[in-house]
Image 1 (tube, rainbow, N blue to C red):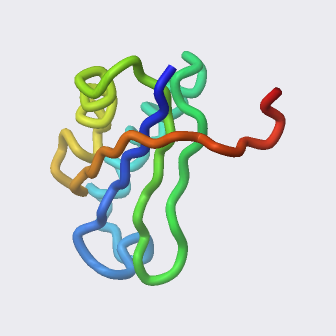
Image 2 (cartoon, rainbow, N blue to C red; image 1 turned 30 degrees about the vertical axis):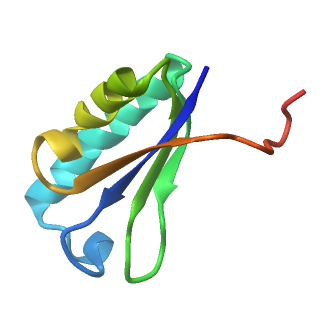
Image 3 (cartoon, rainbow, N blue to C red; image 1 turned 60 degrees about the horizontal axis):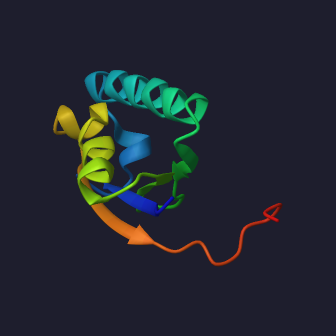
Amino acid sequence: MPSWIYLLHPPRPDFAATMTDEESAVFGEHFDYLQRLLDDGVLVLAGPTLGTVNTGVAVFEAPDEPAARAVMEADPTIVRGVVTGELREMRVSLLRGRD
């Protein structure tokens, strides 16, 4: 199954430290969404980068680009316009624990 990465680009520097209550609530929905993807075996890993630029990263599997785009575009942070998303296909060359 092809692997994909989507990046969540925040609207401003230090986003994690300056989120409004509304943005924080949307990120709660985002976490629940990613948890469901993990439980369904779709998500490989996810998390934010640290420092002053808090880009989010999600690596997941999808059969093709339309399916991958659907996964990214269903993320509540993108649906609600809190962040912008960037989708890229990727090849996992090395993965700890993979046979």
